[in-house]
Image (cartoon, rainbow, N blue to C red; front, top):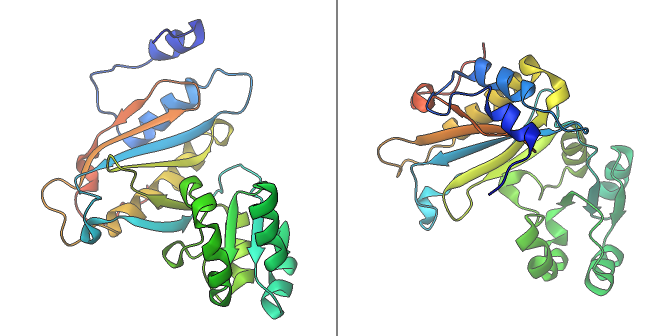
Length: 237
């Protein structure tokens, strides 16, 4: 794969053989963001589990203290008081059958998060083939299936992100924008990694966090030493 001049300049700042501590890695990450837009900083964590087994799943959601820097468009599928609460909390779209029909018939997907009340899941279940592959299907573990639609909307708008394993046992998550600076990014990083470490399945054997890399949208990956994440939750610095 060919890389441009800016990528090569960024890569030259790194020692590819080194495992950095979190603060230094995020500082380097910010310095390697050379695009003309505000690049997203992402974390990629490989875990020593097997996602094919139900007892080794790692999935959940966490509110990042500094948000993601992204304007999150929220669709709330609910009715009655829950719909009113969702609107009051700032949901971009609120409805029930009408929203499901719009997605089914028009292929409408102009939203980033879907929140539903439990009584709506029979209706929302019909959208599994559309929302599932895009990671948009509401789920109780992620807090997106809940009777408290207002609170769920507030959290989504505040920067709540869902983390889950992909088929190769890696979690990919945004932790903010390069413009946040290393300190705010670290607060978000520590919150997310703390949740991932806490979610360690009892069935997981051996080294839990195998590798951890942070990278901007267009920049090179910076490797973080995974040794500190093997014990209890991450302590914020």
